[in-house]
Each structure stands twice: as structure tokens, then as C-alpha cells.
Image (tube, rainbow, N blue to C red; front, side, top):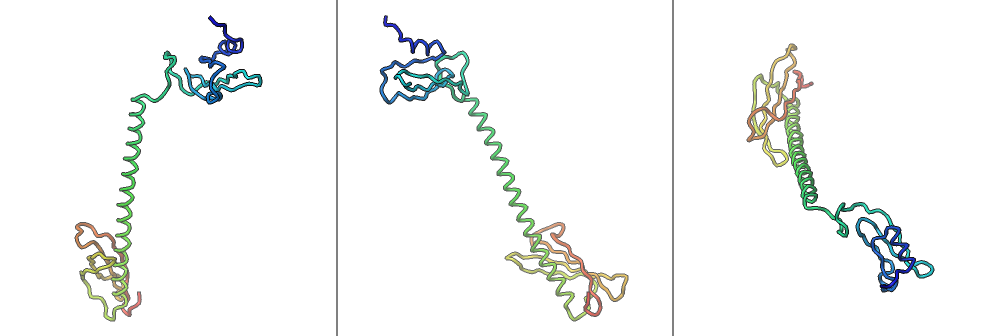
Length: 188
């Protein structure tokens, strides 16, 4: 049996789990590899002897010497489940944001329709009659129903205008309701 050179024996005593012979090819002279939880980097010293640099690895398998570490199937499934839940929450939030954006856009357009009806009633030559007038108007490519309700106030020379606007196909409460006042001389 051949004797082990002293520098190899010293490296083995320091805890190196794998020792390369001195005659390895030049391609393996600076080899970085993971072995039983200890990171070894083999370099050539000044005298041509191998130097071993050891550092603890991030992950080790206890009780399984010689096996490389990695993710287990259970860890991968848990990670995929977390990603799936996170993506579902992101998609749900995006859908709600889009729905809110459409609602705000419709509310703004409905308020423009109501403001147009109020402007027409204030600028009209005749005094608005008491009661309710209904009609429809197209704005921004959509049809809107409006109702203008004219009512009396405590001042006999002042009338209250309540304008309600909703989608043509909507049922229930109107999207926007605005109120304005018109004086008898056309001033508000």
C-alpha cells in the first residue's frame, strides 16, 4: 500500500472529505464543488501542493453522507401553491380595479349629462314648469336616461331643479343626481 503524502494527510485531518491526487488534469486545478455539506475549492499553492479552503454550505442533508442537496417534492409543491394563491389575488385585484374604473367613468359621463340638462334649463327663455320631464341623450357612445324634476321653494321667484341620470338599460337608483336653482329672471 502506498503511503499518503504528508500534505494530503494533513488536509484529510483538517476535515476535507475528498482529496484529489496531485496528478489531476489542469482543468480540475480550480474546481468548485459541493460535497457532504462542505464547500471545497482546490487550488495550487506556491510549492505545487493543493490547498483546501473549506466553508460550510447553506444546506446539508443530515444522515445522508455523499448526497447532494436540493428541493424535495413537498417543498416545490408548497412553493407552487404559494405562487398560485398570490397570482389569484393579483388577478382578483386587477379585475376589481377594472370594474371600479368603468364605474367611475360612467359616473363622470352621467354627471356631464346632468350638468348639460341643468345648463339648458337655466339658459332657457321660459320659466320651467312644475313637474317631471324625462328624456334620453347620447354621450361618449352610450345612451343615458335623464329625469328633470322642477319643484317650488320658499321663495316664489326661485325653482329647484333635480336632475337624475342613469343608463338606458339600468334599473334601480340613478347613477347621478344633481340639484340646481333657477330664478325667475333666468339668473340662478
